[in-house]
Length: 89
Image 1: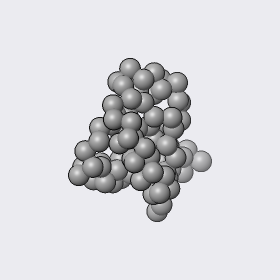
Image 2: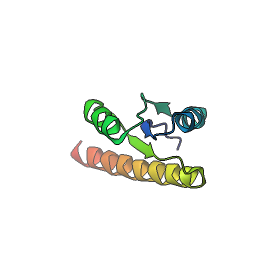
Image 3: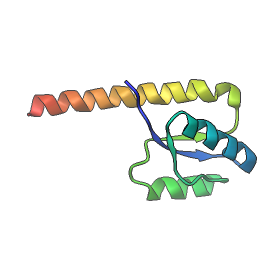
């Protein structure tokens, strides 16, 4: 099952954000405007109602693992919601 997420990325290093944005978009995910501070990230998160994930920091060694964990969690929630909808119909 392929899952494309709408994610927010945040890091104080704007060059790292550009690279991360390219990586995420290359994987088929939509990156919303990114933040360079915790305050900006919090404000964007509060304003974007359909945000499905967030990635912070620029530790590339952990990035793919974090993305896989986020996608797995999203798929589990989607399956639970689908099961509830089937039971209610």
